Image 1 (tube, rainbow, N blue to C red):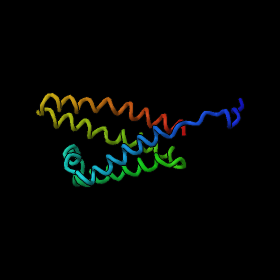
Image 2 (image 1 turned 60 degrees about the vertical axis):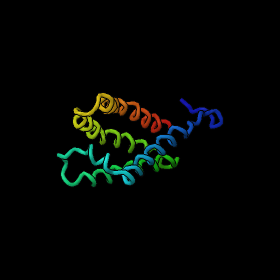
Image 3 (image 1 turned 180 degrees about the horizontal axis):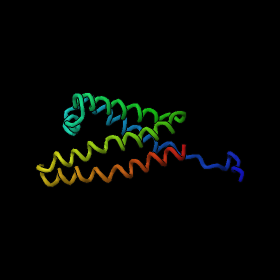
Length: 131
């Protein structure tokens, strides 16, 4: 099977990668500007300080976002985003556990974050496939 000529090939829009990249860079920046909320959801069972994990995940989010912005590194950025979304899932579960005594609204927000990982992973995989 041959590929269509370049002029007929559909070129994927970079907009989804740019949106996801900007979101990740913004969240990564927030880990440094306002780290306390992120510290609070790091499982205490992890070795080392919670702030270390806050900063490390902030760097990972920022770098992953930056990788998504450039066509040359977009595939790597998309795979990094998938790995990142899977890696932070335990913190989201921990948030549900920690917020069991919070208001109903806050508990529902924490629970709602769990299934939101699925469309974010799907978006990153779609960016990977189209890059």
